[in-house]
Length: 128
Ligand SMILES: [Cu+2]
Image (tube, rainbow, N blue to C red; front, side, top):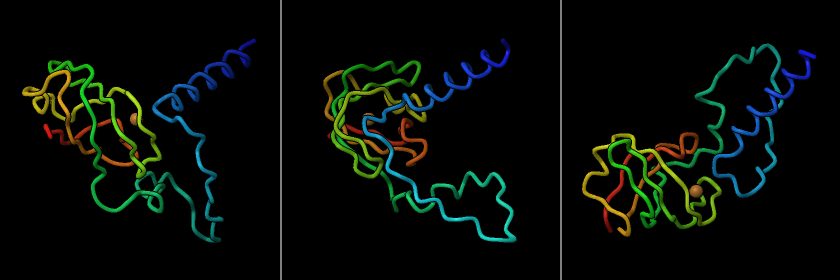
């Protein structure tokens, strides 16, 4: 009985993790075969090193919803090849809610994602 519950919880967690903005199936990862003698610890910072694009990840979009108080903004954004996104409408979180204070629904904006990993966090957004 308990095993079933745990399995279900695990699947739910997995599903939640996948929900965030992944219209396409993940590209097959070519895991570097573990080299001998090198223990693989949780090296989160380097995990995606080969797939993280150099430089800031920027894109353009239009604001379809905004909540400056909580730092939430929904953008109808164009394709962002750096993170394998097609154009879509989705919610982002502003790294600092103050970034949103002069923006409103309908504004065309350019914005910058925090990173290829933390891609639903916006570190910069400005009217075009
Ligand atoms: Cu998206």
